[in-house]
Image 1: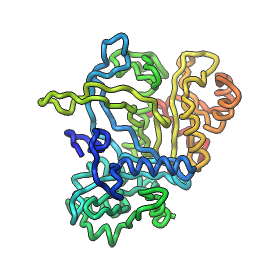
Image 2 (image 1 turned 90 degrees about the vertical axis):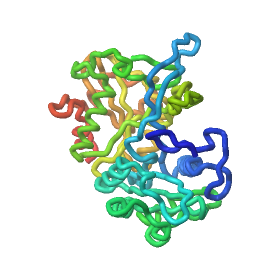
Image 3 (image 1 turned 30 degrees about the vertical axis):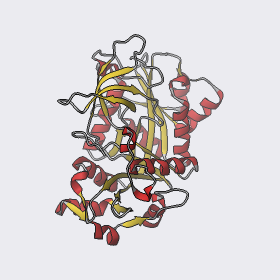
Image 4 (image 1 turned 180 degrees about the vertical axis):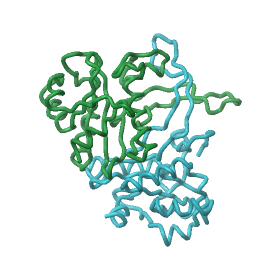
Length: 189
Length: 189
C-alpha cells in the first residue's frame, strides 16, 4: 500500500507487488470488491462501479506519433466515495478501506468530504455505508453511514469490537469472495 | 473540442480556449452541467456528480522532490456514462453530448457500452437519459433512455425533429442555466 499526498491509497497489486488480504488470495481489497461488482453486473444483480481515480492532467506530450500521451498529471482528492450504483431500484453508495490495526479503524482514513457525501446520500434517501477490511483478523465488516456519522462526530476511530456488535460481518462467499450485497439485503431490504 | 482516440471529448475550456455554446456564455456544455450539479448539491436538491475521466497511469516520476507526479498516462474508454447520482430518493444516470449538426444527433457519439449501461440502469429501476446540446440551435433536449435504445437498435442517429416531439427541451433557467432537473421532475415524478 503506497500513499501519495492528498489522495487515496493505490492498491499494491497495481504497482506490481502482492499483499496478503481478506481471504488470503493475494488480491487487494479493492480488486476483490471490483470482482464482486463485476460478478453482480454480469449476473444482472446490480449496477455498481468504482469511480475512476480523479487525476488532474497538466500536460499532454508533443509527440506526434503519440498525441494521446499525458506527460504530466497529478492525483487529486476525490470529492465523493469510491463506489456507487443501483441495486434493487435503490441508489447505493459506499467507501471501502483496509486497516492493519487490530483494535480499531482510524477515521482519519476517511476524508471529511467523503463523510459529508455519505451524510447527503442518507438524507436524500439512498443507501450508504462503509466496508472495512481488518486485515489482521481477515474479517470484513459493513457499517451503515448513520452509525459512521455518529462516531465521526464524537471520536477519532471506530473500535473493532463495535464493528462486531453494531456493524455486520461480510462472510467469505464461495462464488463471490466479498459478497457484500448479501449483507445489504439483510440490512436494507 | 479536441478528441483523443477511444475516449470522450475533453471540454475545450480545460485546454484554454473557449467555445460558444448553449446560452452563449462562453462555457462548455460540460461546465454548465457541472454548474447545475454544484447548485443542486449546495441547495440540497440532489447529489449528482460527474465521474472523473478514467486515466491509466503507466509511470510515476522518479523525482524525489515531486514523488506524486505522473509522468506517463493515457485516457481510457469509460465503462459507464459520465454522470450519476441520487435525486428524490431515485438513482439517476445520464450522458451529456453536444453536436454541431443541425438536423440530427449521430449515435456514434455515444459508446455502445454507455448504451448498454443505460439499458441496465432502466432495467434495475433507475432513471436514465441523455442530454443533447444542439449548438447550432442553442437548444438542449433530454431524451429518456428507453427511447434512445429504440433508436440505437434501428438507426445511426436521432433526428433533431424527434427530440422536439419525443424528447423534452431543457429551457434556459435564470438561476441554474441548464436546469435539467426541472424536466426530470416533469418526466419521472
